[in-house]
Image (cartoon, rainbow, N blue to C red):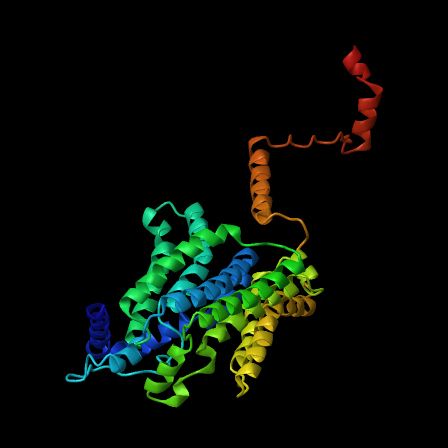
Length: 399
């Protein structure tokens, strides 16, 4: 196994030293591939483009992140930024690698959460765009562009995680495969319009299920805090060890988002939003307003006590879907006061234009008859002529 891990360190060393000009690109990609970015960027953007796809992105994100947490408890997995010191493999010839603020995550490394969660959550986005493109494009290369963009983005996320010493290549590969499979399995099975109790029980099940697994493993003698100790020990700067990278931080986020999804779908603000048809301008306004609210909410400080942090994180992500699904669209609809006619199909405008063209062609093929000229009398130009015409032929003409 050491040969596999050392090959991963060699790959990270090549990425850092051979392509130093790509450092900012890799850091941006690893930021976009963070599961928190799914809640902050991809979920609102997908929801305002398509409500069904947006709900699927949120649901798959929280379920997949919970599964990733459990997988890491069973599979363990070192991270490169501490293994390169703990293993003693590079004591004589230290590896020419360095850490970044996104390197020092405190959870186990296998499988990669960035690749697994993002790969699963973006699957419904990819399939929705692919089906839309397939109906409009005839070229095979154009139809495969969404799938190609999906794979390229995930590959870039995997390389960025190797670059920042957060994962080994085999952990990235495991995350990519698992994420794609979960996305394929879960996309057709996203619950829609279930009772509020369903989402409440889901949130409770995520909390109790993970807690039960955790205490069973601890009772069996496993130390599940080993990765937190190693991350704190070998991180170059203590401020790079973020509290929101702890395993139970993702659990509080997922359970809070599940409860918030149910509250949003059953809130009074969501009822008019569900019946309304948002125009493009209203969708853009919703996205900008949501970003303006979610951004400051995401960068709020955390309580120093770990228990208060988990409660705060739970409440924050409970509010998250309520803002995106219900409150922000309701505010935009209220101020714009522009709702489309209800129960109209999506292609109503296209049908109307086709009807107009058909009517024009029918009129051109069968023109209406020209209007008949109304009857009129022409009077003679002089009275004498009129009298002659009235009395008949003259005496000379009779003789």
